Length: 276
Image (cartoon, rainbow, N blue to C red; front, side, top):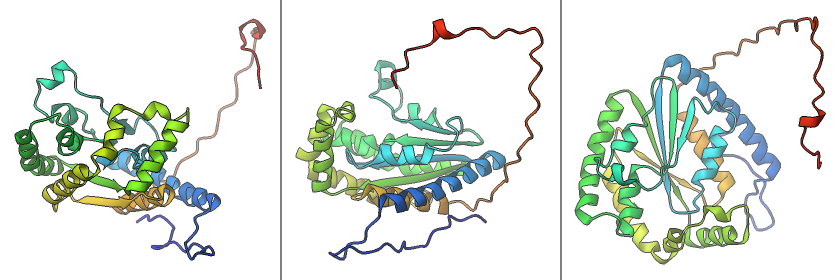
């Protein structure tokens, strides 16, 4: 059975303050190894017809998007499908709450990743008053039952909560304001994640305690250091499967056909300006 070829506890060199250092080079080497394992896992999921659903929850700026990008960077997006659903439209508001999520469940040979999921109801919707208290209570009662049905129907359900501290979250949100390549991520709700910090903490605590089950347990990952968090989460994800590698069979490329009477078209009039 395949396992990622890294130690259970990585041996990094401490700096002068006694804090272990994870250099960029070390991180990139470890990530490359893990992504190679994810490719093996992908082939196994397809071959075995597995249906995998992975949830990523956490506060704003906890690192959900980054780790999802790391997981999907080297695999096929036809096999690994990512969903970050917007607020429900008018039609979806008239449906049962879980309907739009259940419709996106994986079929055989697929992995679905949710960047936030149905647990919005236990978190942001509860804290910011987007749903009524009785709706949150119904959700917390019904969700373990629904998740048991999903698991018994053959779906491998894995739930991650990315934990980040208040100062690190504040630092990341401020960085988004300053960085033009990141400020598209910001919304009015992001600031409320700071002003409602302990409301979110209480909601998280209740969610974890009431929806952590034998068939769908929560896995909390420390993401105060994004690089370590990504490596730890992906290592844990791989450990959830007793997969084996299906060697890639390389097919020898055929010879290119003869040009015959074909005359190459001058593409100069169609080309863009080469600035670089």
